[in-house]
Length: 309
Image (tube, rainbow, N blue to C red):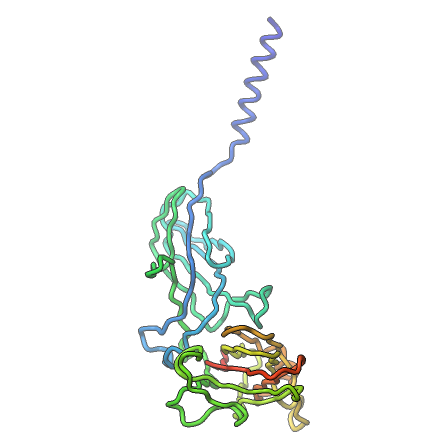
């Protein structure tokens, strides 16, 4: 008899422990889904329009923040590689507001994903969610993928220090004469033109510049170069300036790009190199071809932008 009492007490104790260990809150997640992000011209006219050349991008990750209905605090869901389907444990039924921040690979390095400060976050509101179901973000394209449209910041805040699209409507090219403008719509990254520099097997290196001396007085500014490139050899992007006002001019490299088999997009942070020049407000952007393998090859550039924020 006593044996049965012990068994009964053990069962009661086990049930109590099981109940106390039961997790609180929902156990079935909702899912948020996004395939891609692409840059589009805003419809309010706040950004200078340069045609399709301004729209090339390589947004390969996003950070997602939510504001749930009835909750005052922000929920940061994290940063995710695209495409992504994000599980979220919540008992909420509606996202009052969602912000999606575009992330890019800084200096073409996969391990340095950053929120690109020149892109505005995508904002949406009143998304209805439910357990064990998928809520898509953005709009669905013809191929079935879900996309968000991203805009550049207003030119009231973002400064465009220099651009070069290599289109035939331009009278002059912003680069040294060493850069040849090629009109070839089939091979241009966008539009109908691109820039090309040829290097022969007997040349070990070749340096060319954006001709203009560019100016940025604010040492706290973000300073970036954006461009599309297709190169048969290594290509170093750098800056030329005076290390001290009135001192000698030198050239310092920022990042080296490696050979590609087609067009690539790159976002280059000039800030660390600019600091080595003590944030001299005048500088030039330099491009050095490094023909290590001594081949006959071409370096192609398109949609070059120097931006400050």
